[in-house]
Length: 343
Image 1 (spheres, rainbow, N blue to C red):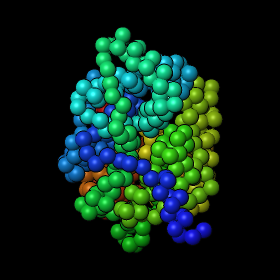
Image 2 (tube, one colour; image 1 turned 30 degrees about the vertical axis):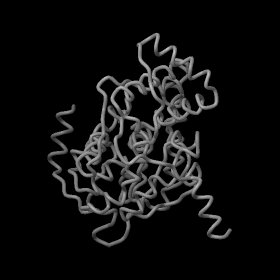
Image 3 (cartoon, helix red, strand yellow; image 1 turned 90 degrees about the vertical axis):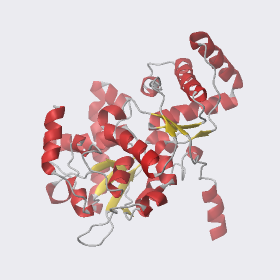
Image 4 (tube, helix red, strand yellow; image 1 turned 120 degrees about the vertical axis):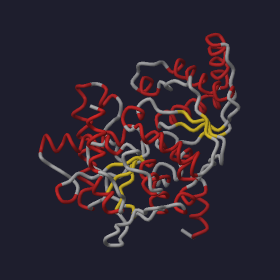
């Protein structure tokens, strides 16, 4: 295919990402797994990039896990999300930025439903008005938080204190990127790069000096899958999904894994610990696990933030091997103190 044709096709897989004035919606899951990530996102946007980001104190869960777990009906989910839109409208914002991939997927599904079935939107507007007295405007721009960091990846690189480069060898760190299934598999046109070649994390990694590792199960589920884990009897399937990914990436000797979904880093991190306990198997080098990071954590490390302020002490697979390679300084005793205090 000619270069012009490739460029034309790739253009179809780009998306508009607002420049400023973001209504930020946190993830109910992330606040429990890796709470430092959302704090880092806000710090980067507000302090480093001088962007206007607003959080409403009364926003709630989007019901995404309940919806995909067949617990919450779609009409209920749509009404709850309509209330989120109303909070955004009342606050004077129009660019919605959810922290959660599942929220992003659900918001997209709802907006697509209303686009094709306007009578459903009218019904939900009536439900919301009756229940809360509120009204809303459709978001002008919907972008996941990883889209926003991707948009400003060059600005972050310009402020970099560290890069994804091994300071001892000068070689780029080998990075596995894992994209949450609800980012672009549900609606490929809504994610940067589509479903087959999502570029949202790859763009960050390449800009910050890392090398992307391709491997056979690159697009395989992390193992969460909601009902794979929420139903206790299914958890063997959940860990088997993660193990399939680890077995597939192991020969390529990755230095780290980066994700953009709330559940993915938790499962790729925790299941490594579980597999080690069950089988004595580790997938990283020198008998260690493969450190797993959120994209906000990596952006924070690149900008020189303290690893424990980013919440890396919350990971079960130690992140220190990557910190040492990048030349990130840290106080090991502070990590122990934080873990003990949390316990």
